[in-house]
Amino acid sequence: MSKAQFQSFDETADPTQGGPRVALLRAALARHGVDGFIVPRADEHQNEYVPACAERLAWLTGFTGSAGTAIVLRDSAAIFVDGRYTIQVVDQVDGTVLAPQSLIDNPPETWLSTHLKKGDRLGYDPWLHTPAQVERLDKAVTGAGATLVALDNNPIDAVWADRRAPHFGQIALYRDALAGRDVTGKLADIRGAMKDAAALLVSDPHAMAWTFNIRGDDVGHTPLPLGFALLPREGRPTLYLDGRKLSNSVRDALEALADIVEPTRLTGDLAALGAGGGVVMFDAATVPQKLKSAVTDAGGRAEMVADPIALMKAAKTQAERQGSRDAHRRDAAAVVRFLAWFDREAPKGGLTEIDAVEALESFRRDTGLLKDVSFPTIAGFGPHAAIPHYRVTTASNRSIGQGMFLIDSGAQYEDGTTDITRTVVVGDASVEMRDRFTRVLKGHIAIARSVFPQGVSGAQLDSFARQFLWQAGLDFDHGTGHGVGAYLSVHEGPQRIAKTGTVALVEGMILSNEPGYYKAGHWGIRIENLLLVESREISGAERPMLGFETLTFAPIDLKLVEAGLLTMEERTWLDAYHETVRAIVSPLVEPDVRSWLEHATRPLAEA
Figure 1 (cartoon, rainbow, N blue to C red):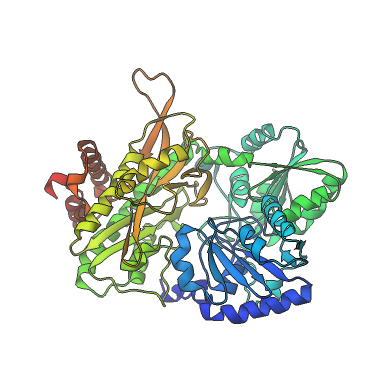
Figure 2 (figure 1 turned 90 degrees about the horizontal axis):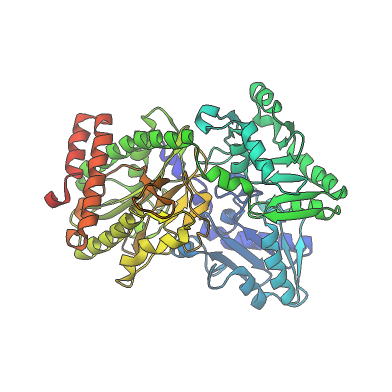
């Protein structure tokens, strides 16, 4: 792997360019006859990972996080981020040009109410905002005596001189043996959830990929084919896919299931449904305002719902569950090889964060089955570890010395998606490091050992992970866990373990378990495994119960564990987990790595 890969969009998104680029945008806005513009970090599908040509927020501001919004007015501008990015936004954005704001404490709607002037016209791109987002913005803008204006063309595209062309990755069929279900059965289930709608517009490419058992290569790290699908209550579905993505064999296979047309046909087809008075069901979380308007402007009715495919996709089939187990065991061997290598090389000095990223990906590529990393690896030493979503570049690359090192990474294999975080110490750990690490570990164990009745949501479990930090007046500003797809997105909804995780957990869902603690400017801690929701038989139970099967297998650094803070049950869990890691991984690695693993997974009493 070349270090040139780290000179990616992160470094072309230069904070020093914020002023000139905002000036270019303001000139373009004047030509459009508007006084401001909203720049979300979004594409036409509200994807987490977007094509390079859709990285408008990064180009304009320098901010490369996965979520954020900028607003540029004639005489003021701001960028809004959540708690994951409060440190990163200060490092990446020129605060004299775009004032950083909390997405929670001072959201765009609140900021607009005090910065818009009466009579102002605020522009937005209707392909990049959902109807709910537009409704909130319109309320705030109207309340300020201004007008929200949908623009036909995004003004950033006109001034972004070196904007990349769209990428047309080839679409591949995903074998039924890996999916566990064929397309016909999935379509029948989806139609059963459509109620009185004439059609369902599938705007989330993950849902489209799952429904039609296809995968693609249009965005980084997630095997997505970008496109839309229209599923009528009766008759053949239509797939809106660029023909350049389809080989003859793939086209032939898909045409046995659906009509395939170019995406430029979509708005016209929706307008035709609307003109006939049709009811079209839309996924409220991902559909662009542009497509809803195509139906309603023609006289039809748009029914905004939670995507009915999301829960079907989230509950993995038996084949997907087994594929995930296989992928995690393969991945465990690569991660253990990396940890053994790091433990040997880091104390010598000379390693950098980029060296660690490259080494871990190399061990994964040695499996011969790696398709891609499932997200840009987070490898942070010292203060960089305190940035939850830090991404190393050649400009930020830090030498690894004595102290805390955090690496959060994952892989895409055809049979499963992985995500694991380990925090290790080079040299000796301080008393404070051990205390904080152990509190995070206790929370991790509390989630892993949870048993709960059917109907319980992730929000009800979230505090289990935080309670030991709370006891010391501490917390972390991200969710405890996110859903994970089956050779799809490493961050999958609707399931999550978080304060906002209102969806009930069901058997077959995969989630992460990743509490953390971050001492800004010094070091950070996160411990992450993936979990599979499983049924639990409990003698005398009066209702169906659920629990978690741990899928991830790699040692937890015993040098950071303060054994005296653990209960007997927690010590037993840690020893049993390490015994399982040793049993699963030892046969998969070389003798020297096996010897290292024996020591790394020794009983806590011997540590």
